[in-house]
Length: 216
Ligand code: AMP
Image (cartoon, rainbow, N blue to C red):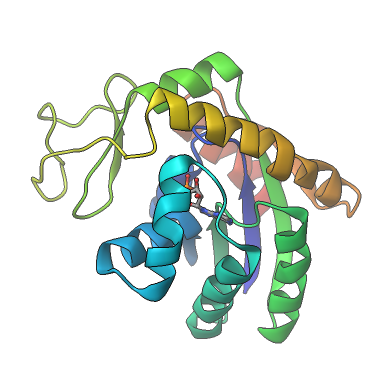
């Protein structure tokens, strides 16, 4: 299993990009720690109960909790193909923990992809983001609208706005990113594992760039 880390601020389009790569690239899968946590919160598991208030405030849940989730996920994931990590690691400590998890699962880091998106585009993307609470498909009111306004193309469910996509929590998530996650750019650069990808345009352009420069 080769691991592709998707590194980018909230709203940089990690989830949208990962979903499109899964559609377009053979043997490609993805896992989002944010999504694993949202499911845990919905199900009311012990991890979910711990994570809920932290997520609602835009903070980061503990490195241990997240590393255990990803470790469990990798242990049962297919041993071949490429797996994109969406939202993990988010701290230098998590990146160190990931190295151990990869060793334990006979997996290797392919690249860390830094999604380079202008701040104005990030704010626009976060402000217009809509999600399907049932099947998780992601939309944007102008950039990636559903066929019928407010309704999921895939399962017909009414779309919602993520609880943490309000202006106050968005500001907090962006500052947490700058303080705790952005240092990972240097971390992976110093390991010769970083690829900077222009990702402020259409998702298909970003997919094409990654296919040519990372997966080829
Ligand atoms: P996301 O869907 O990636 O924007 O994640 C939503 C929220 O889940 C984040 O704001 C954090 O509270 C939490 N979260 C997701 N991934 C991590 C992680 N790797 N470390 C800590 N908290 C995380």
